[in-house]
Length: 350
Figure (tube, rainbow, N blue to C red):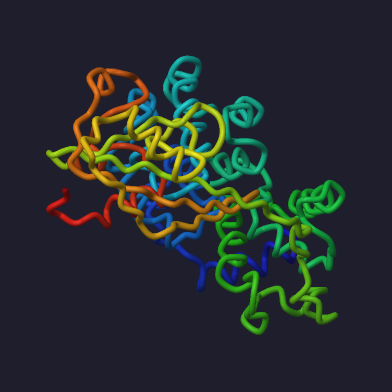
């Protein structure tokens, strides 16, 4: 076993995380679900979502059989909803092609929607002790600092160098423990800011520590100006307290989720509201602006509320619109800022 792996495993035995919910039992399904949830999301945030998800959908067949709305409702709040859609699609493929199981062949597994090289490696290493390297965000940071690799890890040359080191350090034994250990090291000690180098098992051989570069390795993604998008949300509620929701298009932000109808501005919102409901002289009430950041732009939404309206005949019968009670809203996949807005409405609303 190489020295890097030996030092890491010795540290892991005493200081690693051994009681995460996806480790007991550590099945391929639970590993897969946790790895996808942990993409761009921290462990503390993921744990309650993971627990709720596996309680509702305990295996691949249950996930494949679930409706899209059910999957999105369980995922709602985690963000990056494409991950949930890929999970659902991959589960259906596993049932159709692989007997309801995740394939143990690396190439077949990596070809499933939303998996790819690193996630496939993690599933096979953690669930089946197969020797495959991983390269998630935590591992990139550990290896970049240890080997003194400067530059943004998303760049092709840097990523290729990191993959080479990841392959070289992965041992032939205790593969599952090693895989968990290197993720734990990045998550608990070799953190993005204020790394605890003195407690790190690799401190004596770490080039970033030796050269005082831990604060600048790895380099951040090159900065880019974020555009701003302004919209108006249309919040229509009837006399029973039901809210009109609209399913978003299959492409774009929040694709396929249920959200509030939107318009370009206040004037367009009033015009759209009159087409969606019988307002009967109900006056729009402006609500506080909501700001939400995406990877590529910032959203500023101005909600306008009409209470106690009558729905136009036929709206509830269309596939893209539905009047929903609070109970029904809880069972749908809804973007986090929209859910927060609806949750903030008074209980006696309207």
